[in-house]
Length: 190
Image (cartoon, rainbow, N blue to C red; front, top):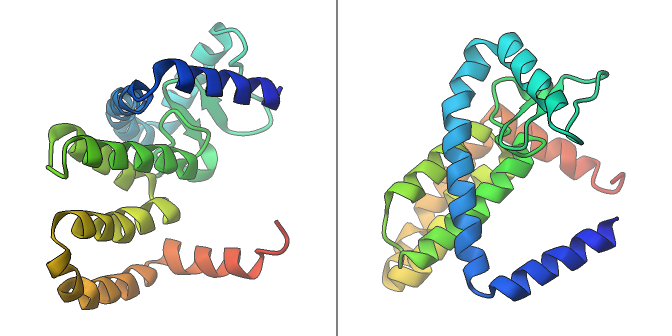
């Protein structure tokens, strides 16, 4: 099954060529808007929205939710009971959704020649709602470094102390430091 998925993915990228990345960014942008509309309802009315998403998921063939966990997916939006205050978007979990968003942000930045635009803002806001450790690290540290290296390399050295200070402050957030420590200690178990 996985081989078939990889083959189909490879064929799609080959057929679409460079347009694949642009199409990817457009699709993720639309899905980010949907998740930003539904996410406040998830926070305020979790049980009700879960029931609605779960019922719809049973109406769509092959997308039925499992009874044993609090997870429901309707292909354009997911509710993951493990992270009620976190946006899972269309993905199975906030971390996965954050990774999809980060890729779209990078494509958007490069495509728009490092100019801020409406799509970029929507993608960043959606990433912030994931509260994903990996997405936050990339969004707040790697993307700014990527931006500076491509826009104005002379300012890069001036901002190194800022990046170090911001990194230290970010690691003080409970969902960052504790999770990173736990995953680092259990890295060989994976």
